[in-house]
Each structure stands twice: as C-alpha cells, then as structure tokens.
Length: 463
Image (cartoon, rainbow, N blue to C red; front, side):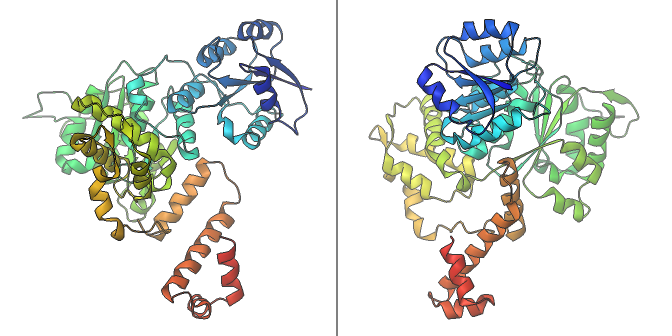
C-alpha cells in the first residue's frame, strides 16, 4: 500500500488535506513537527508527502531540500494558502511534483496525487537547487490566476536546465520578465543576461549586434553573443529575424559557435537561448519567413503568456505591485487603490496588456492629490468607456490566432476534451452575436446561422 504523509501547521488543516485524496488507497500519517517528520523519513521515507507552504517551524524550501537528500526519491506536493510567483517557482525548482492553491482542493489534489502515486511514480525529474534567485526580478512575474500559476511552476521546473524556451504572447504581456525569471533562478544567474529586440534593428545591424563584424572595420566591442557567454541571451521578436541570422543562431544552438560576418573565424560561445515571438511562428514558417529546424530547436519548452483581458483576476495584485514600484520611483506616499478604481481597471480591455496597466498606474500616482488612487485618477480610461471593444472570441487578432490561444491556454491548464469546449464556446459566441445583429429575433438569427431555432436556443441556454 502506498504511504502518504501530510505535513501541516495544524492537525485540523492536515485532515482537510487528507479529504482531498478521497478515492486513493494509501496509508496516511499526519505530521505537525517538521524535524520529527524528516528524522522519520531518514529511515523509512514515504511515497508521497503533501506539504503546506508557509509552515511555521521551517521554510518549505528547506523541507524540499532536506527531502531531496533522502536515499529514496519521494514525490512532494506543495499546497499554498496564499499562492505567489516566488513560492511556485522556488517549490518547483527545488523538485516539488506540483504546487497547488488550497482553494483548488479536493479536485486538483486528488488528480495530482493519483499521478504521483501511479505505478511509474509520476516523477518529474528533480531540478537542481541554484539558490534563492533574484527576488526583485521574480516579483515582476505577478499573477495568481490558474494560467499564471502554471507558468510559475514551469519556470521553476526548467530554470536550472539549459533547455531552450520559446515564450509567445501579445506585446506587453511580460515575455521578457519570464526570461529574466528563468535566468535568475538558474546556475547562470551570476553571468550576464543580455536582451536583444530583432524588430528594433535592420537585418545588417542586427547581424553585427548579435555576431560582431569580421575583416576591415570590425567592431571594437564584443558582440552580444560574446557578452552573454556563460549566461543567457533573450532574443525578442524573433519572428523579425532574417533567414541568414536564423542560420547563424541555429549553428550556435547545435554546435556552440558562430562565424563573424565576412569572416571564417569561429567564435565559441556557451549561452542559453530564450526566444520570444508576438506573431505566430507557424504562420511565419508557412510563408517561408522562418526556418522549421530553428523553430523546433527553440521550442524545447514553450510558454504562452495570456493577454491581460483573459486574466482579469490578476489586475488587483498587478495594480498594487505597480503602485508600490511607482511610489518608490516618484517618492510619493499613496495609501492604496480604491475598490471603485480597481473595478474600473478590471472592466477595461487592456489592448496594451500589462505594460499599459503599469503606465496607467504610474500616471495615476504622479497626478494623485488625495493619497488614495480613485476612479478619477484614471480619467483617460473613464472617458473612453463607450468605445471599449468587447472581448469576443477572435476580435483582437483574428479567429485563427484566437483558437490557437485558447488551445495553448487549455493545454497549459492540463485540460482534456478541448475540442468540445472550444467549439461549444465558439458556437455560443456566434449565437449571441447573431441575436444582437437582428435585435434578438430568434427566427432571423437561426436563419442567419443556418441552424434551427431549437439549436440556437440550446446554444444560448448552455452558455
């Protein structure tokens, strides 16, 4: 029989966690004394340990590190009362099998426990422990929605590997912040993090910037590839990189060297490459603008950053984060953001995503005269409310991109039956849009869509 231990700050909370594993056959033990549990684990480690994040007698990171030192591998699931990006990243980096918000119990815990206790062990390879990381950089990857928690967990899992990571998402969603979090949680953290934006330079200038210049008139300083040696290079807007530079980058990834333009001299470099794209690289490949072999070389691990309009529950914590940053930068003392102001922020569609939200909060702090950010401090948002676009499927970037986004999001959440869910959502949106177009006349709406009135009613009723 599988053995499960629960480590929590109180027996009552531990019993609540146990109820999250109702259909699993296991022998359970509850621990409230961390030192005693670790001592017992030295002689007879269990199959699974469920740990509360925030236990009082020892930080969860220390618990994870101690368990990693056991003679036998043990699956660890961390349950967090208050989720955070740093908590998720640190837990997964230190080898946790999963990191779950307490509010997702019992369903998420039963699913994770079943996988962890499966015959193959359900093991995710233990990641090395590079240390505490750069908290200032990690703090910028803010978010507590399910999509963001999955991203934090993924960062923790792959940070201390040299795997290439491809980060995709709309402009302003925080792709560079993910790259920095990966770098500062890796063993390369003491080496340079170098960022380059391909769309900001002409192809020839980008070539020189990335790989230097050979022959006469060679550049005085080292190229970005040389500066990043031993560290991480973040290549943003990689869809704007020309085919010749793509070939040079592929050589770096496959052989660990590059040749300077107009020179046959080989320059060795040891860099981890993290790339980002706003456009669909699949579409770029279809049009011949992006190499297929480079795409698959970069996409060892893929991260999709959701737009802010699809993670509105993160807006309050993001706004508070940017408020504190703006206070420090502008030497202002603001008591907070009023509930009415937060509500206004959550209704706005944010075409500029997180970057736009930060700028709006900065402006509000700079112009505030009351000590509390009020709706009137977001006057520019209030004035344009009537013209705010709806958030219907496909409106922002076309139907194809919207469907691709929905697929990536649901894959990140490990959902199943994705085809039925997405098709059902599209049918609902079409039905509602058709009804709006004909002033609610069901007969006309059904005729417009080429379906029966009963089918139309069913789609709207199931919404």
